[in-house]
Length: 149
Image (cartoon, rainbow, N blue to C red; front, side):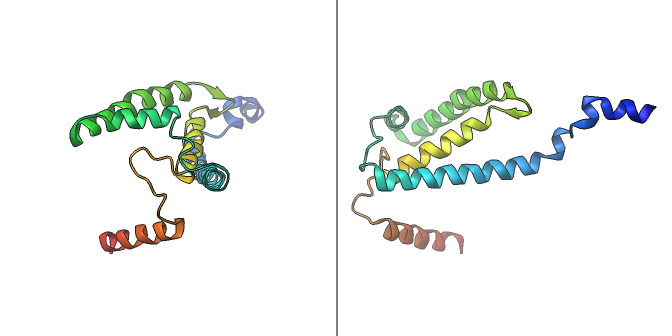
């Protein structure tokens, strides 16, 4: 009779949070990469270069870039990431849809917007208009090769 009551309780039916953390992290990582790559392709092929330079993330990047010196920019970036993004993540992680925290939406949104920014060449401080995509990738890989190997 005790086994019947254990099977009927919700805690016996649902696995603990540690049981599926690894699978959720891998799923979220894969979803982030999928959103990022699809958004990159959309930005690269369908948007004009610099199409997102007037959006609010670009305005934030410009604000951070106006800080004097390295430490000023580092401090502004740290302040923005810890206070603003941290509070958004904490607030959304307190809300759930069934067992999935809404904080996952932040990761998917950031993957999408980062892909659009890079795909449309809308970076605030760097212009890659004169460098074809494959040449830029090859240049980046050559630079990393000297650092990593």
